Image (tube, rainbow, N blue to C red; front, side):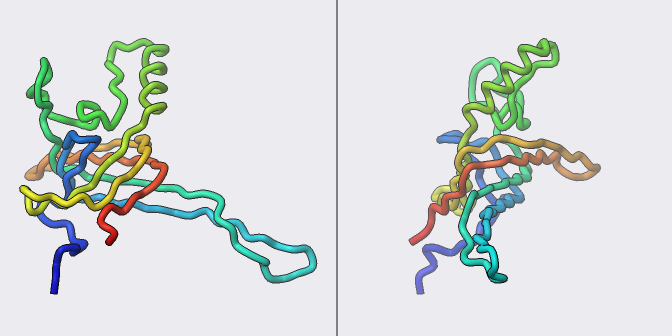
Length: 166
């Protein structure tokens, strides 16, 4: 019996990547894909004639246990919150209203793709899902005594691609 395609995610739970860059290790990833449907009704008939798809919505929530440090440059050991890892637009505290608006607008025009990988085995992590066209909708963090600081990021996305389909 082959166990090549076991769909469990072990260890830290998942490695989250944007492009080729690992941005963090997640303890929880929740993706919800919803298909919008429209009933086709006909006057004088009680039953719907058909049900047609009219849209698809993908929501993503990632709970990071640890963000990966930047690898070089002047901010090399800065750590990594959602802004430092390019999940949320970087608007400095001294930015004017128009500069902040331009920064956020530019960020949302591009979006990003996330790749979710199994974190075990570390030397041969398998890509499980790609979430295409992500735009962040919220971020939060939690800090409690005796625990690691976690970062939570919620995104809206264009589509979900399952990468380990045989």
